[in-house]
Image (cartoon, rainbow, N blue to C red; front, side, top):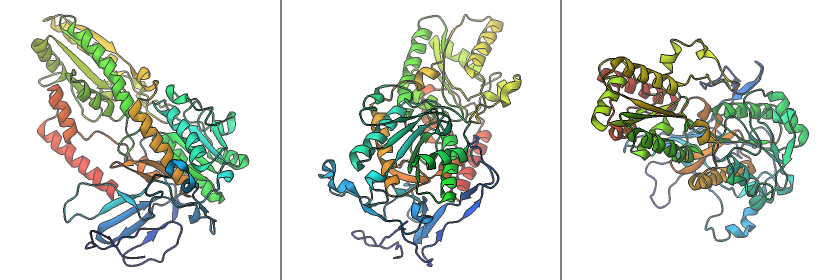
Length: 526
C-alpha cells in the first residue's frame, strides 16, 4: 500500500486507502486494528433494545492510520469473517438510468472527513468510508432476500425510507424478495411478515407513520437471528434511533459469531436530531416546518389579548434542536428554553422577571420550550422521575404545563397586571405527518446508500451525511453519545439574538460549560 504524502501533487494525489476485501501487512505508515472485546455495557445514555447474556462480544473499531494524522474509522465487511467470498459485477453498469453518469462507482479509496474546518498545520483527522455503489458486489440479485424493520417512535419519512429501499433494491439491483417485519424487533419472532414490492409501497410516502408498525423494547437477539437464519434472509435494514442502532449492533455481532453471510445496515432515525456524527437526521426538517404552525397559532393567540402569552412545547428529550431551529425560523418567539441551557424562574435575571419585562414592552410574548428542559425543577417534587419506558428512556414530566402553572401563580400573587396564557402541545401532531419535499429527497439518498453498502458486502454500519457527503459509519460512533446543542456555539448565540432573551448564565457558568464541552469533544475524538 502506498504511503500518504502531505506534499502530494495537486493534480494526481498519491493517496490510497484501505481495501476491505484484502488483508494488508502492517507498515510504518498504515496499521490495521480489528479485534473483539467483551461487551462491558451500553455507551449510550439510553438503554439498548437488547436482551443479551454476558457472553456477547463486540467488535472493536476497525482503524486505519496514515501519514499526516490521517485516521479512517472503517466499517466491518463480510470478508472479515467469511473468507474466499466470490464477487460479482455490479448490475448498475447495465442500468439505463445510470448510463449518463460519468462515473458509475465510488472509488475504493474515497473517504469523507469528519471535520472540514482546519488550520494549515492540523492533522488530517478522522474519516469515514464514502457511501455509494461499488464496482464489485458480494450478492447476486436473485440470491438476495432482504428484510426491513422500523423500531422506536414515529418520525416523518419512515414510509419514504421503506419505499426507497424496496424500489432501490428492485430497480437498481433487480432484487425481488423483500420482507417487511411488522411491529419492530419483536416482529421477527412474534408477528407476521409482509412481502414488499414496488407496487405495494408505491404511495406510502404520502402517509405519516410506518406501514410496518413499530414498538419499543421486548426483543431477544438470539431469537431475532434465529428468525433471520430460518427465513434465509441475508440483508437486514434497520430503521431507528440510537437505542435501535445499539440493538442492530448486537444483532450484527450475533450474526458474525455464527458466521452468516448477512449484511446488517442501519438507517438512523430520530426526530430530535440527536444522532452524532451525521449532519442531521431525516424528519427533522419536516418537524421544524410543522412546529411553525404551533408557534404561529401561539403568536396569534398572544397578540389578540391583553398581556397574552403563547407557550409551545416541542419535542427534544435531551437535545433542543427542534426548539432552536423553529425559533430561528419563526422570528415570533421571545424566549426559547432547551435542555442544554439551564434556566431559573425566581429572582433577578430569572424567567419570570423577563416575562414581566417583555409584556410591559410588547404587550404579548411567545415562549418555546423543549420537552426535556427544566426537568430538574420537576424532579424535586415528583417521585416518578426515574421511571423508564420500554426503550430505557427516562419518562419526562410535562414541563410545559408546569411552567404555565408557575407563570399563572406568579402573576396571581403579584396582582400588578392581568395575564392570559395559552398552552399548545403539538408533539404527536408533528411526528405523525408525512415528510416534506426536502426530507423525501434525503430519505431516498439514505435508502440508496444503505443498499449500495449492503450489496458491496459492508455490514455492521449505519449511513448518513457527514459534511454533505454520505458515508458508512460504525455503529459505535452513533451510540456512544447524543448530539446536543452547543450553547457556546454561534448557532445558539443567533437564537438568543433573535429572541433577545437573557442566557440565564453567569460569565463563570458559561466558561465552565465551554470547558466541559471541549473536554467531551476531545474524549470522543480520541
